[in-house]
Image 1: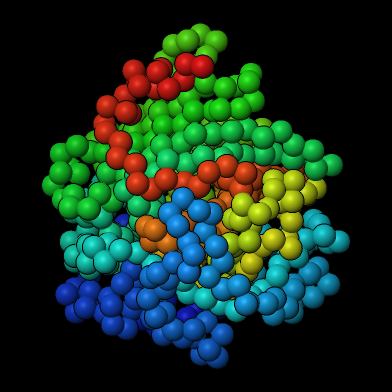
Image 2 (image 1 turned 120 degrees about the vertical axis):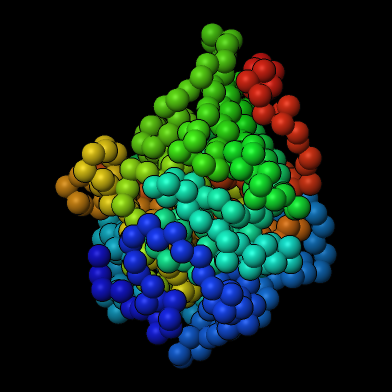
Length: 454
């Protein structure tokens, strides 16, 4: 990996890869909301002002927006500053990941990165900011780093001391309390042909429920519950998945069940983890690629490399628009770059190296995590020969009604097959619903069978 351009702050010097359990001091936590933004990102601008100071992010939706709409662009007047292409990539190499550079090499005639003005739009509710400050002085990793304790609602480690803390910040970042998501995914062939796989997802994030306590989370040992049903094509419709993700995975690992329409029965699915193939993904992502990274981190050694500035997908409202069709987005080799928006942001760089005693199709993974939201925006994955295998990018927007910065589309590029998976397509369907109030009864094996029946 190229030499990192580290930000000259005390934060960027904290690069320990040990499993330090120490909580930060009250004095360090007091920086949250002052010199640091409330979730831990640097509040100030960068040296040349190309990354502005964070001023609260988006706190009000644009005029005319109503809950249920696809979110309109809050920056409609912004124009492309310049485009990075294969011909000028070398001029911008220090601000690109190795995987992004490989995409230029793989698709020299069509792949490009349109760069816009940087807008630090990330925001979260006030209770999340308050909880984050409390977590900073009390949150700890459990044994081996395979879980978190003494934390609730907010980011557990806003001033991270090692790579495991940083990746748990991504896993536990705020995305609302419960969400129903509609849409699907497509895996275009090299020629650009595709079939849409439709999904209906329901996610209940127990960790983020307003008012939840660390003690209650320890008692229930449930981080989140997730249920997914395939809605199309007809041959797969009704197939369903249920996952219970635990806070302390030493005490109890992830629980998962599947419903198969042919057998019409629910089965326990202990293999829905790690590098098991993702649901109906045509072999283009692993289970732990979902949401850029999810699940137990125990198969890797995690190193916090520091911070750098990077061109990352951000404020991708055009890609999110319901004026755009799937055929507008899905092109041979990669999604339509004219619909994407990249900005220069500071990111935490976390490297994961496979432990000797474990197996996984990825020998090494490098994650680039937004300092303002803890959303992984870019991930480079290496195979067992230490060669780039896959590159993933999360195209983020701020969901005003929550508010929360989250991806509208995750794209996983397989460099060997020259194919990609676009996960989260929602332009031709209704928008996510963050107002639902599911109960635990909706996330039982019996409920899975009911939701799977056609």
